[in-house]
Length: 190
Image (cartoon, rainbow, N blue to C red):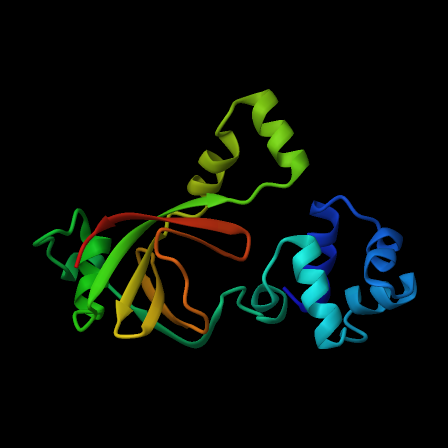
């Protein structure tokens, strides 16, 4: 997704029109329209204000990969090549430990989707928890936070790949947000 697409989506999830957002940050509606069509970018002060108002990170808005990171490594894997040992509960845990054996600690993460007001209402009316269940069905990856010294790594393991992102900003391992997802510390595997 481009910056403009993310801005438009976040604005709509916040329930704001272009006019309302423009009014809140003291710019014209046409400036918002220009940014949403990727024909321009807000200055850093407006970017900070937009991120705050729309409850998203600046990194999410600017990063094409929707991750808060500056180094990204993706490797292909074969889950059958890994053996569950130690504190690992499954083969994806084993992959993360094998690829990040030098880490001081690794935590499995629980992921939930940050819902817009509309999604929250639908979730509540239809079946509480259904949005998260559907999200988990669509994304069967397992997520981890690996720490080594002062560095933190956000790790995603699927059946075919492991993707590691070095985080640009330190996050609280107990609870943090990346893009549209909230992550919470689960069990420790290393």
